[in-house]
Length: 112
Length: 112
Image (cartoon, rainbow over all chains, first blue to last red; front, side):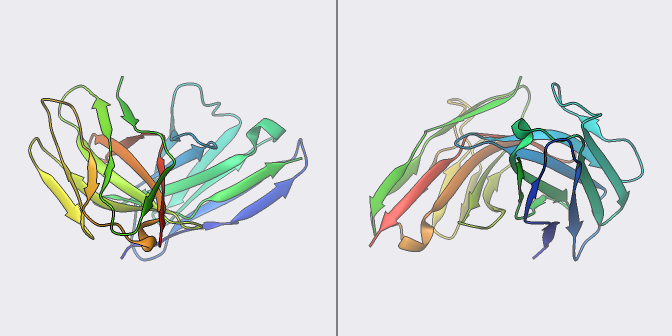
């Protein structure tokens, strides 16, 4: 089946620094990738839709200047959390669309 | 806007018990409906889906029927196994790239 990877799986950073998370579709090309944030005991919240070669579309309430998304190729999308704060600590999940959404394993971000 | 409501867990069952996880939705138009499963330490995987009213999705012994009259897509399995222990998410999707809206997830634990 289609495989989506995320790197890193876990990251700890200091407040004020930036963190980049990569999402790769390993065996298929995805024109559309999605970024989600998962809160404890809550649903996955869609943050943005990333289309290859164009600007990402952000959901209402998501700060586009804080969560920078770059979809540079058909197999890679990156999410950069800029000037991270402890409230950005969360589980971030990406998915890549190819007839259906295939999900990455997620990245646990902890901001100290 | 679109939303999904699913029964909150956790749900604990004995092996071979009958499982029902309720899911109802609110949406304009005719969404597709999905159940995703997240095993411990893994990403979300599509379990089953239905794209129109009265469709039944099925996989690995799980079933769900798209009921437009009750706006529901309840997940059922006749005899659960320990290996079914996971978190189950109900979701709806609309649009060409199937932008998804998720329920909060239901954690299922099956004891031997």
